[in-house]
Length: 347
Image 1: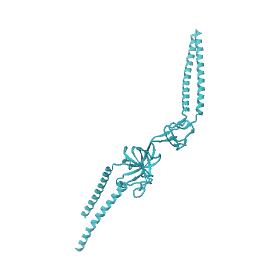
Image 2: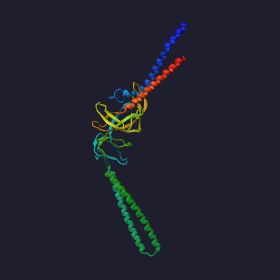
Image 3: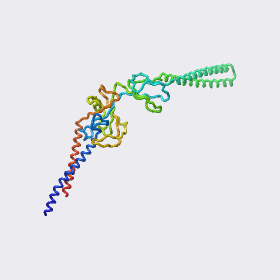
Image 4: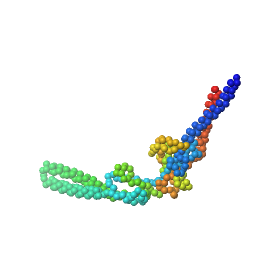
């Protein structure tokens, strides 16, 4: 009897401990999952090299508050090279500032000039041939007028018709050759390629097989910021959203802007080697999307400057989301406690 009483007391003491342990495990699992969802890319906003920075106050809902960006020209001119022509002279170098209308490079025109001379000679020869054809027609016509033999007249008329066809063919060749001459003359006039924008020379291709633009010019005067966001956070952004641009060097310098475009059609596949919140490396492939920010003021910004982009969220909505997460966590804990109680009752 004494042993049964002692066993009953021991059982009553063990069951509450088991319940507490189960609840603690459930809370720990939920907390770990939520922390993993809110994993960020670094601990320090300034001086880090990651794509974005996670604000601890919203780590529980996965809101990445800062994204990396770079200042670029609003307008870019891509100058294509005519594959049928050969470059003669390049007037600029990478980094040079140019104005609209400034010469960039020129094509060789010696061969074009030679072809024009040949074409003009061909025109002269064709004109001479047409003159001879007309003289033959006049001669045959005179013979027709001086004979009464119908057979001879018919034969001469056939010759005249044949020569007239040759004249029409020669005239067609004249028009074609003249058009070629005009096109080549226009090419010579356009042999010097000029800039259509005020800007800075960004790239000059040195490859003869490169299919891209031969020269790229970044327009100056109007800047925008190009940012990068991964597939987990692209849904947090929207076109028309206000953002704050932060200098990476001077925390006191900021600029206001608006997201003008989110390019979800062009994607980049990068290996995600960023440290997750709390350490570790995912080592997984992540899809990156590009978005653009139009600025209200560009004073103090430099072309090519690296910055951080902070979206201005509606924090009321963010608190609602966080509240929903907390309620979900409480529901999980309560459900775990109920299951533990049921197991105790069954025992």
